[in-house]
Image (cartoon, rainbow, N blue to C red; front, top):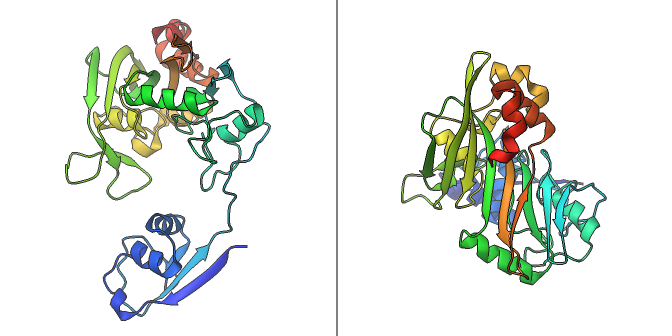
Length: 328
C-alpha cells in the first residue's frame, strides 16, 4: 500500500523550490519529486502544493510514496495490426488510445506489452527493459505506423537513419481554420512549456532548453462545415520531437481538431461529432525506411482509422475521404 510520510520544514527552507526540498527530504531525484507533486501527492499544511510553491519554514510537508511498480514490462495478449514483419523489424499500425511503452500510470495495455507477447524475447534490448525494440514513438491518441527493432543491430541501424533524417514519416492531420498557402515549412525549436511540464511549446528564448524542430506541410483540402473552417494537411517530419506536429500547427494558429492540450478542443463541432473524434485528429499514414539487413528501401502505408475517415467525409466530402490514403 502507498505510504504517507511527513516532515516539518526547517527555517532554512524559506524561499526554496518545493521540488528541490522534497527531493532532499524524500531521498528521490528532482524529476521523481516533480512527478509526485504533479500527481497531487504532496501537501503543505494539508493543502495541495505545486513545485513552484515557496515555503516560509515551519510548515508540515506531507507526501505519499506510491507502491513500487515492476521495473520490467510484462507480456500481455493484446491484438496487433501488423503491417510487416521479418526477423529484424516489425511495422505496426497503432490504434488511437494505445500508449507505446509502460510509464507511470500506464503499466499495462501498451504496445510494448503486446509486442512482448507476440515477439517473446525477439526484441532489441537497447531501449531497456521498459522500452524493448522501441526506436521512435507516436502519441497515445495518434494512430498509425511505427517500426520496432527485433535485434540490436536493427535498432542501431534504424536509430542512425532517424538521426540522419533518412526515415520518412508522413502524417495526415485535420486542423482548425483555413491554411492559405499550398505548402510551408515550420522551423521552430520545441521544449518543455515554461509553466506546464506536461506540455511542449515553441521556445524562442535561446537561454531556455529546447531542440530544433522542422515540419514540412502541404495543404490537401480546405472546407467549411457547420460554421467552422477546416484544413486537411499532409505533414512530414524532418525531426521527431515530442508533440511536434501538434505544437507546430498550433503555433501558426491552426491547432488540430480535438487537441484540447494545444487549443483544438472544446468546439461545438467536436461535441457534436464526439463519436468520430477520440483525441487529436492525427494519423501516421506513411513510413519509409531502409531495411537494416538488406539495404532495400521499404515503404509502408496505413489508411486512417474508420472514425477518422468518416470525419473526413463529413467535413471534406466522400470523394476526399475515399482518396485520402493516396494523398500521402
